[in-house]
Structures are given as C-alpha cells and as structure tokens.
Image 1 (tube, each protein chain N blue to C red):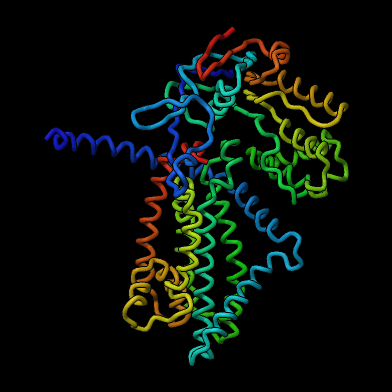
Image 2: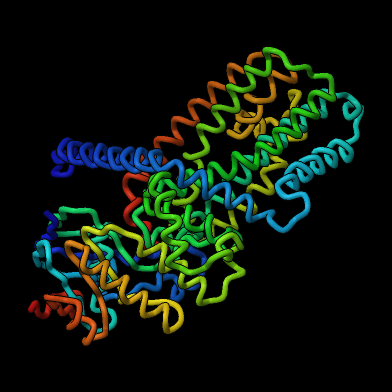
Length: 280
Length: 233
C-alpha cells in the first residue's frame, strides 16, 4: 500500500534525474561538436596509420570491397547472377552491411581503446564516439566509390532515385553515433560482449538480406527479413536504386529505430559518462 | 583572480562487478583505494572529507604514501573524476601535466604530433601555428621534426613530449610528480622551464614523493592518508 502511495513521488523524483541526464548528454555532445577538429584529425590519423606502410594505402578498402562483392556475385551464381540488378543488389547490400558491421564491432571496445585519453584528459566522451563515427564514414567512403562504379558499369545511370537513396544513407549516418554509444557502453559493462557481438555480426550477415533476395519465402527468411532492423537500413538505401520505388516503409522503420536508439544512447551518455573512467 | 576551494570533498566509487562470463575471482576492476562495504556492494573510498582553500600565489604540495589519494585528488581538481560529495569551486583555467606522452602517434611526424597535441589541449589553429616553432626550438630536434615519431631515440621523444606539454600559460597548474626529460644539458633546460612555469602559474598543486622538491617549490603541504587529510601546513 505504502509503495502504491509513493509511486507518484517516485515518478516525480525520476523525472528530474532523467532531465539532468539528458542535459548532461547534450552538454557532452555540444562540447564534442565544438572540438570537431580533434576527432576529424584523429580519425584521419587512424585511417592513415592502418595503411601507412602499404603500397595501395587506403585504396585497400576499395580492393576489399570489390573482392567481397565479386566473390558473392560469382559464388551465388544463379539465373539472377548475370542480371545487373542482382549485382547492384549485392553491391549496395555489402556497402551498408560492411558499414554497420564495422561500426558495431569496433564500438564494443571503444572505451577500452581510448582508456589513456579518458583517464588522462577532460575531453568529452562524445569526442571518442565521433572519432570512431568519422573513421567508419571515411572507410565507407571508399566502398561507396566502388559501389557507385559498379552501379554505373551495371547501367544504373545517376538519376533522381539516387537522391532517395541518399535519404537512407543519411539516416544510417545519423544513427551511427547512437550505435557507437550503445555498443561502447555495452562493451564497458560487459567485456565479453566484444566477442559475442563480433560473432553475432558475422552470423548476422546470413540473417540479413545482404546477398539473398526475399521474395515472399516463409519460415526463417520471413522472420529474418521482417524482424531484423538491419533489413530496413539496407532497403532504405537499396530499394530506390534497384527498384525505383520510394522506400517509405523502410525509411519509417529506420527513422523510428533511430529515435529509439538515440533515446537509449542519450540516457546512457547522461547517466554513465562520468563513471566510465572507473570501469575501464 | 585564481582560487581553489574544496569543501568536504569525497570520492566514493562502486567496484563494478562487470557482467562477464569469467570466473568470479577475476571479475573486479584493478583499481586502488580503500575497499569498503555499502550494503551488498563493494565501494572504494578514494577521498574522504577533503577541504582546503588556495588563492593566487599558493603552491600546494601533496604528499602521502602510495594509494593515499594524491593522484585521485589531482584528477578531481582537473575534472576527470566527479566527486561524489562536497563542493569544489575553481576560478581560473586549469592545466595539468600528468602524462606528457599522451596522444603521441608513432607513425606521425614530430610536427604533426605537435598539431595533434595542440588540438587535444584545446589550442586554436592560430595558437598551434604560433607555438610550433617555439616547441621545435625548445626540443632541439632540428630536421628530425619532419621524421616519424617512431624514428626518434627515447631522449628525443621525451624532449618533444616535454616541450609540447610545457608550452602553457597556466593559471592553475596540476602536476603529478615534477617532470624532466633528456640528457644532462636538456634536463637543466627542462628544470628552468619548470621553474618558469611554476613562477607564471597562479596556483600550483604538485603531488610528489620528493620531500626536497616539495620544500623547494611549495608554500603549503597537504598530507593525505587513506583518502583523508592528515595535515595541512
């Protein structure tokens, strides 16, 4: 009975805490945005360091992308494989999937990798989030160049459908910092998640319509297509180009998913950003 | 006017039982401090009721055995750790010399590392430009400045890190041990730089185990033991 009587008071107490958390998160984000030169410079250095001693440099990312798309298009030779639309389907699917996989798997160990900065400077936590976001965007830029080349060679001339596809890409980029925050906190609280998430993302490729086409099959493919949020990220970018249809449903689902993800990310950032230093 | 006022500051943090699949005995984070129980949770009482007041011209030496809370107190003053109790009031820009090698990238040139270091320290592009030659001159690296950092000897790397880290106009300077770098002649130069910094800073808080250094540099001495102020003289 007493608990029931206290419920409104508890709700009142939780509300200011939530508002304070959100204010803290927005404060951290705005400070990090003012320090954009820091995370842009660090992300460029990260990319440069990864390929500094190689002959092709960052172009290796483009080669990797071509290798994967080519392999899938070759291995999954079906009557569709000679169809340019299937190659375009795989090319865009791979572009989005690689971006998501890299973002998520690298996020899980983010705070651990940044431990010396977090324990030795007062940089806002969101600086590290944006550093990784920027790094993933730069890497995806190389794959995007490869994807555009494949599409043009496949006879997909640049038209207004590409603009619709950009909406999907924009949503994907908007969701990226939220993905990074959520998975970085998961990795800080649950270190084993680095391996669990890595494995799930590897397996997840087969449960996401990256290279297989959903055409009303029942069973596992139906669930994998309809109940997998990544499907909608993929279709939001892919459908306008491969089918010419505005992906209203995919963009709506992606939009709601982004809102939910950002809400969680903001709460995590607001509530735990000052505690991360004790966790790593 | 620079000032620092701490009133009954405490820092208690929970020993997070990280969610992990490893054996229970290996779960805890390796953190120092005094472990206490708070209900069913284990907590570390890193600082307990720390109060003091510093005004412009004060040089405070923090002394105490390992694990007393000296570095923790410096990190609270710098804003890395948020105190769990008490109030802190700081007027003035706080600079810290904790880890002077932080952010240096082995693949980047010395010059690029100065730019990165400047960005991390919050310098503007104009400030980086302005300080660049001064840092290069002070580090005495000459043409090596355009070679990758990894090509430097240990002494050269230390000289660059020292030069970049101490190019400051501090109002409040926090130091975890006095820093020095390089060979005998550079160490003399580094000592002069540190003395100048100490001279320029409105307030200094220096944590050290070196009593002679504390006597030479500081005007006040705060002894910490187990996170508590044992004496302030």
